[in-house]
Image (cartoon, rainbow, N blue to C red):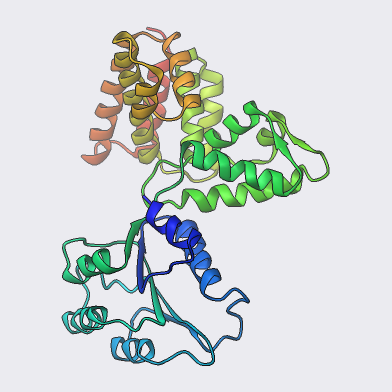
Length: 339
């Protein structure tokens, strides 16, 4: 959750230290820039009060810089990227020096750490959580994501239809680990805005024409083709994915995830779960609608069959008894060819 972070920026009350972590590089850099904008309203270009450190970090130099009063200014900011200090593998002496500094930090100095991995049980991490701000930045969802997209559209004098918005989210939602979903979305938004410049509105056809399908989105299309028993479309999508060098084993894993989600949706529907409950478990409303539409075209028995086959071919790959590409083709064909 970034609520405390948002409050600090909105109230222009910047703490002595921030540790922002996670795989979303776009969000980490975005929040870093927002913090810096509060500290340096006129910008940091050419500023002698802004210092950047990267791995390997000289902790003695960092602490020395942090103890130095700002040069003709109110603040000094230090940004440290991917130091590895908080992953559990940081040097003991470095952590001790940082912990000592954090015990009595300079009020004019603001530290901003941007990390991928953080071990919360470390003493230094606990100290940051206690006196500063420790925030895991996850890809935005729901209303926050919608607000961000719509604000980008408004900024460029564009509106976006509901169908176009749903298609954009579906095509750019990345479900794999270590993937910067927000950066991918940001790049695709830039393309879409440029493509529709002067048009006034973004339609579904615009999204389909210009936005790049991520692997997860293509898997949605595979699921559609499997449910419809459409072998021709299924193999065309497969060919497209191989052209972009997608990993066959990962595709099987993503397919398994999607059919597990279908099974979960079936359980919620049969239990008369509310829309709110379904959104909590399945995802945003567009995803719930899509899952329910698919369920109207496939039996529970067929969902379980796909899951059994996916698990079987996954084991064949891992045991070395079958190549990943051959296993994927066999799985796909087995789901659409009637016995």
